[in-house]
Amino acid sequence: MTYRPPIDEILFTLAQVAVPPGSPPPLPAEELAAILEEAGRFCAERIAPLDRTSDLVGARWEDGRVTTPPGFREAYADWIAGGWNAVAQPEAYGGSGLPVSVGTAAMEMFTSSCMALSTLPVLSQGAADAIEAHASEALKALYLPRLVSGEWTGTMNLTEPQAGSDLGLLRTRAEPLGDGRHRITGSKIFITFGAHDLAENIIHLVLARLPDAPAGVKGISLFLVPQRFVAADGTLGAENDLRCAGIEHKLGIRGSPTCTMVFGDGGGAIGWLVGEENKGLACMFTMMNKARLATGLQGVAMAEKATQKAAAYALDRRQGRASGFDGAAPIAAHPDLAKTLARMKALTTAARAIAYAAAAAIDGGASGDARASLLTPVVKAFCTDIGCEVASLGIQVHGGMGFVEETGAAQLLRDIRIAPIYEGTNAIQAIDLVMRKIVREGGAEVARLIAECRADVARAENRVGPSAAILADALTALEAATAHLLSPATGEAAKLLVAQTYLRLFGLALGGALLSRGAAAAGTRQADWTRLARIYAEDIAAEAVGLAGQVLSTRRDPADYRALAGVG
Image (cartoon, rainbow, N blue to C red; front, side, top):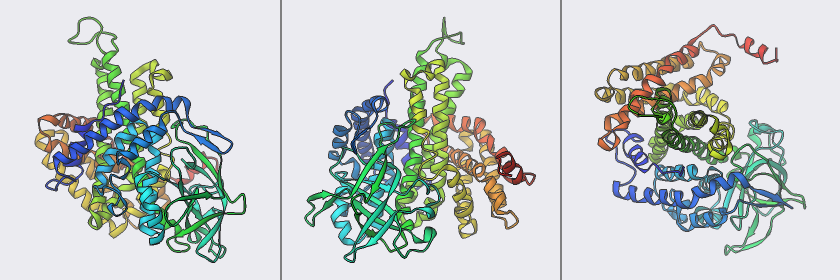
């Protein structure tokens, strides 16, 4: 089965669902269609054929050098030449300056085609964002044009063996040399594309401590550390004092090298400060937030691919009797399989709508900042959970053949399984949502969002019918759960205990409202949106009331959970 870029679904979601009713699409319809159709063609023809080899061969490490799977080098060069790396990057540095939502749609198709290769441009684009927002004008002029084009690539160096989610424990050091440069010593782990053979230079953004830095996260600074030094005229010089000490052997995305990086074996790598001293974590969050949205998009992309693969198999595989068929029927005709395929489609469509809504909020500039901030943890966690759920259902649809690697169904689950873990685990996203995001302005942004969602459901009632009441109930459940978490009477331990439950509730309620928005706007070409909204309401959004009950319950004792976890 060959991946088919879902151009019609993407265009409709961008123009009719991601933006509120009455708002203009990110670009005129003909221009938007032309860009995304060409992006889809490129991804289907040049990137998708590499995916299976990427998994079977993987990235290789030998004597400090990393070799990517066959075809990666040529395909990435074509990606750059086509200008796809620069779609939503700033025009001042050679980018196309198109809306973030357009770049998001193009990246969804790239990711569906080959998730392993797609991790490279995501990090390069995030590094460019961080440098543009926080670096000196000299660093921007020297590094951004080639990062934006994709000629050079970028990395994010946070994690150390003793410092995973708690970055306050990191030990990498930065010693000022008195001339604006710093000597960087230390090591980092889990660095995606920290070394590879696809570009002449890799620009590492590295978190490190200055000698007089305060303890904890308040003492972290950010440094730009190039693999190769760059002269004032942009020409490349000698290698910096850094190396890849090895790559991980992983469950999935095997074509994406996950590197252990060592800085300073020969006395210290040279780096330049980005932003203010001891303010590095705030600078890095510019890159991390972009990466979190892109990670959520990975969930959408792999759910789409899993749904397509499962549907193709279920229409081809014949077994048993079903109404309307003489002889053996396609297994897709059996009620349980049809229901499973519909669930996969509904979850995928809802997750895409949420991810694109967050991208559209970013395009709104300052007016969309609060909405984008609120939705970022939801996109990262809910959409990646959906990616795993749908990929797992895809294996189930294949039956025993899904457990056989040759079909490719298992690869999709292996690839997407990292997404709920990296870029801040989904538990951390839930904590961020509950403890920081919903409380801003006393919950005003959540209230605005729920009000918009209620209006969407009301507009769709004539299309969705009685199922609209279930979508409205889901919003009521979200509203009640939010009020409970915002109440001063709800303690911190109680909030943390139900944070992931609340995030799931948030995603389910929002997804249903966005599907109803699509149903209200759907024409003849999008007739399935009405069916999807009804199925989502009856089979998925109905879970929301139970989730709210869990959030609202006062009968849980955190000590019970700790005891069963073995910590007393």
